[in-house]
Length: 147
Image 1: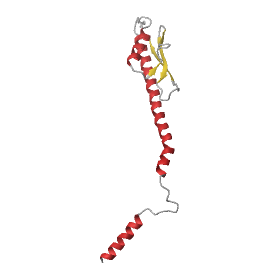
Image 2: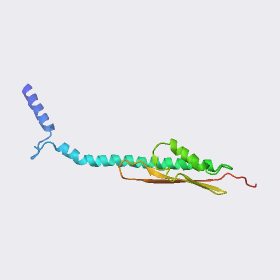
Image 3: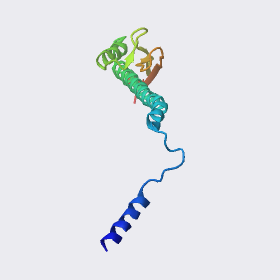
Image 4: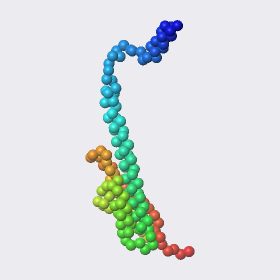
């Protein structure tokens, strides 16, 4: 009885084992596969980080432009209040948007409208690659009107 149980157990173990195929004697295939796939994986990771950096830079530029519009659209706001507010925002916002101070934020105000534009470059994960960012915000100027 014990002999038949052990023989049956051996057959179960042999049936569940991975069968060896002819030519399956090659070892070290996993490191080679990893060496082939790793550059593609790293490229996808760096691309995802770069896309995120571009979106954060765009968001930073848009928030600075909106801040400039909010400062310039006030009733009797002094000339240059929007540019100063946008520049102050960008100084404390961090380095997500670089080279924004080369031309600087620009705001154009008419009797009824205010438009502010912020330009710069996004941080780059890949050296030598540059992604330009330009965001514009628009608002109405506060003024007295007849009823």
